[in-house]
Amino acid sequence: MLPSALDHVEEIAGKRGRDLAIFLDYDGTLTPIVNDPEKALLSDSMRQTLRALARHMPVAILSGRDLDDVRRRVDIDGIIYAGSHGFDIAGPNELRKEVAKEFLVKLDQAERSLRKELAGIAGARVERKRFSIAAHYRMVNESDFPNLERIVSQVAARYPELRKMNGKKVYELQPDIDWDKGKAVLWLLQTLGLEQADVIPIYIGDDRTDEDAFRALAKKGVGILVSEHPRAAAAGYLLKDPSDVEHFLRELVPH
Image 1 (cartoon, helix red, strand yellow):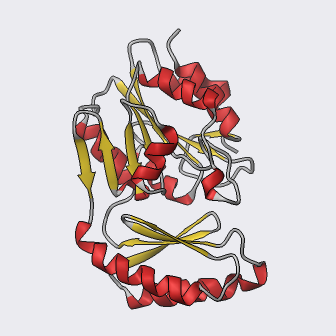
Image 2 (image 1 turned 30 degrees about the vertical axis):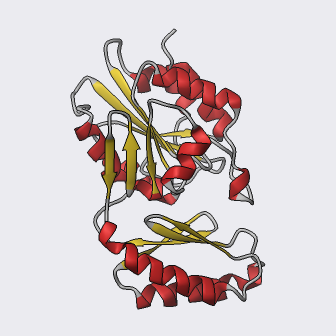
Image 3 (image 1 turned 90 degrees about the vertical axis):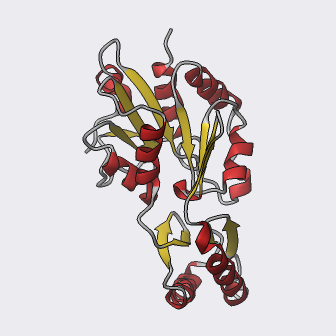
């Protein structure tokens, strides 16, 4: 079982003189998971905590949501936003990276196929992001799960340029290239000049896509899993829920 990050704040943050760089997922990490993704709203206290952190250290939000969506929800100037699981990155000082723009036509085609073929499944919702397509089934009757998964797999098979990813009650199709949240974090560390020994990158996330970031930082930083039910993960520490995350982040703000 992973140790609680709240019980090891000093150990995680390192000795005095070490700088921190904070990387965070959004849904399930900064906000609770809800049935309607539109209702996953950042609390005022979490926003204040993030704003306080950003005054002292680099902060980046890496979400499966579309870049504009997560930026609108967090609404803090001076931090970095990465949408579509790190395929679309923007930040201060004209920081910008779009990975796999050449896949947009295939994504358009796959989106049309998914919308048409999932239309008959009650509760299924197709969400297009710039660099991925999500098929949500949180509101789908459990008896329809196998049919929905079969349809998504069949569409994915018709577009070999795309890969199917599994998340929490969601399947996603995204460009099948060597890029993920872990690669995005490493790119940000390099681009921002944070690959020095005196910088400790910390990544906090709850979903399977966050495992790539945990693995990327295994030897150079700290991974923290957010989960009420402990499970195998590449992270080194555990937080139970977004309220624990907020408490932990407040502990990192210099006083």
